[in-house]
Length: 419
Ligand code: FHN
Image 1 (tube, protein in one colour):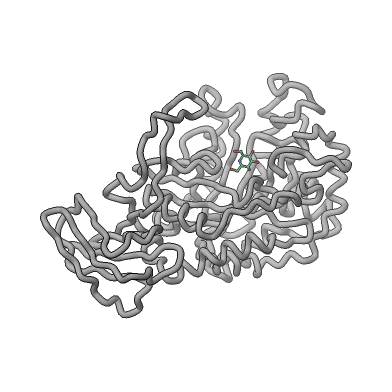
Image 2: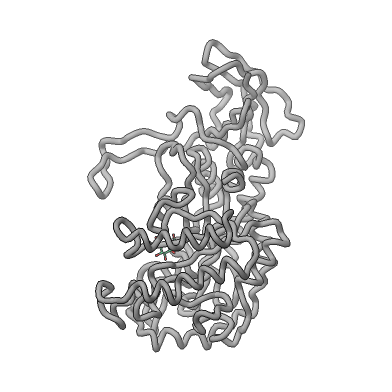
């Protein structure tokens, strides 16, 4: 887990045949996330699999993708090796329905990208849809071609495709930092023996590979829901997968991008609660990561160049009141009281250091209560000289005098050295 706890920030990539229709089928826009188009439009396998013949992303440049992850300050990358549509993005000998055998592109995306990541010092992981496979008669999820899941020989699917493909991924692509399983249908609770088989395969072939929290039984860390950032500190290893717009796989009409400021806030917010941020891009059918995604991620990377010390390997806040408060005037879908998230500042920590990320400039001074120990020095990471700021401490209350203008962009990070 050591590298995962250090890394904090990763790149998720959803890439597969669904990037060709890009949210539109037979001239009609299909609602929902792009990679679900086969399911949402109930496209028969015989029609959907024809997309493979068109898949020829000649602009795919694995080094450019790894370089972008590096520029964004991301430390690991997780790409869909097979999503729910059943199409493998690598040269699989288990099923010919793969990017090498079934397309004019005739290249192994996983092989090329894993090699590029190794060249750029980015850890490489794979997403694998272990349960849903809409291409296979006995895989979960495709009820429009193959009828209800309960009537399927699910173990036949697992034994003949899912398990052997996971074996391939763990033997042919170098070190796999983690496997990102997803939607564990028919393999949790009483059926978790099925999930255990994947654990056994992974532990046998690459004992260092981490397993996410969506296999069906407990993984090596907890996976939060999609875009579901918890309201408070969570004291275990966890990660939140998130989108830059409203889809994972590319959709041509979704240009509602989160801003770099919002992404930076979310990253810091997550780290201050003890988690990792796995942020997604959906490349196009040409093999291009949308320019807006690239620009926004690189902006986060520029902020991290200055302030990364307060993110990588940093622990959660010892405070908590800065995160927000329960709001009884609103309710969530389940009827629970809402939470009003406060956005002025966040705190991350390392031994002997409190990092105060100021998203709203507080004015002439910043006051912090409930500080444990004595603060010996205060300075900004954006100040290359680390010049000391004037500070006063009375018991557990610290007041730092601030300059008129924030020294950094987006959020200025103030370090409080403590004894
Ligand atoms: O169904 C998938 C979805 O397509 C996407 O891959 C996300 C990413 O976390 N996971 C599932 C829904 O939670």
